[in-house]
Image 1 (tube, rainbow, N blue to C red):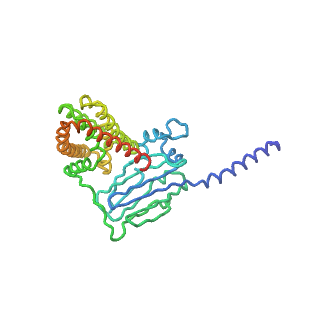
Image 2: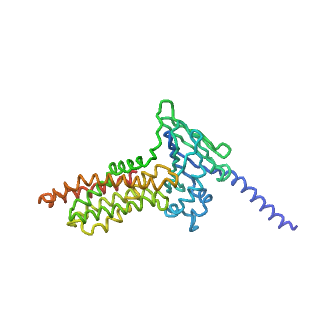
Image 3: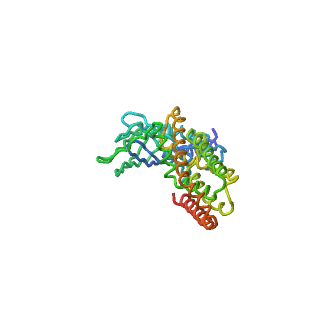
Length: 361
């Protein structure tokens, strides 16, 4: 071999050998904040985007090496399979079902996943096995921060030692699993609407303008049908927009109704706008059922009971409020100034909720 060629070969080998150690010592790092209440383990996990892109080939579906919120939402199901299904949580030996509650971009190149594992029974301790570490590049380290009541701990987890325990301290009460009976979901629906102040203010704004009873009932029916549709879609996992989008959108719907009240005289034809807003509110209702990881065969009955509870609570509130509004609207002072003052208040409240939910939650 000619000396010049030999020199070139030796230089190439030197460059290759110099590069290998640098690559070998690039250790992947992720972190997780785990919270245990005795029945549910919630976690916020943050990974480098490139590592999750390696696990989920369809994550960067346009191949531009940049992830967008839309791409993340489209990849929720494969993300759940690659991450949530590879985290095994057990309490008293029983498996705790995991769900992916949210996924979003953070920091410079991070991708965060909010995960919840719901256990079938109450227990003081749970064991977490991060099998997904076997799927990540060799040498990956995961910083696990665990919180149970007032007990906080940190540990470094890696493939060779991928399990850790989390337990409530002595004296701390463990949460109890939700009542999975039909009556339990029915009561949950009533509770959700009665404490869902934004939903109630929205409904109050809709009926505040009064009108023929037939028109008001059509508005309420449109709202009911719409939120029933999206509630089912979300709980079944067909469409599940992030709460970061839905909650501000609900606030804007409240503000819109308050402003529209200043220009409309009655509820005639108002169902046309109530229906699309009802679709948004349905995704908000789904958050309550999303806190419980139900086996798929149990979802239809749970949906029916929960929705009936929402409607029962909604009708109970309207049965009290609607007659008062119809009576008050017969008074000239209320019909002229009262409705406008209340509508401005509804609009201001909706805008305040929007700002709080976008910038402070």
